[in-house]
Amino acid sequence: MITFRISLKALQVAAGLCVLTPAAYGQTPAAIARGQEIAERACGGCHAIAGRPGSTVQGTAAPSFGAIAGRPNQTSQRLESFIMTPHRPMPGIPLSLAEVNDVVAYILSLK
Ligand code: HEC
Image (cartoon, rainbow, N blue to C red; front, side):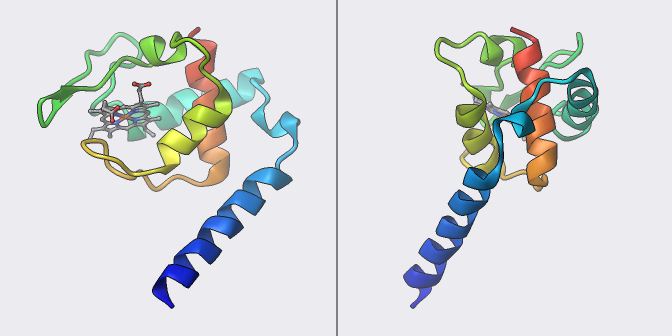
């Protein structure tokens, strides 16, 4: 029963992502500015942002957002699912889908 509930939730999340139009991923200047503000607040403790140094968590260095943006074949979809999936040593970060979209727009603007 528990497994069923979890997979139902996963389906709802997947369905929610499908509803987004490509425009929702738009790198508008407003989205990038919001994303930078969110990133400085929610991610800056670990990742290097806007000239501040990053840090090491449980022996793993958090890569800079510039380096993350520059990964080969980096896409907004990959970044989004990464940010929304908790995995060690990076914690799950409680952001709304809109906030995640803005952060992704900001990261990709650093390419
Ligand atoms: C508590 C520290 C911490 C916080 C807060 C944090 N991260 Fe991370 N993050 C890490 C560490 C450490 C890694 C490297 C290990 C890994 O890939 O899981 C990482 C990896 C990543 C990666 C994958 C990089 C790659 O190798 O491609 C992305 C993307 C990322 N973080 C985005 C974010 C975003 C966006 C936020 C804020 C919303 C955030 N992180 C907040 C510690 C953190």
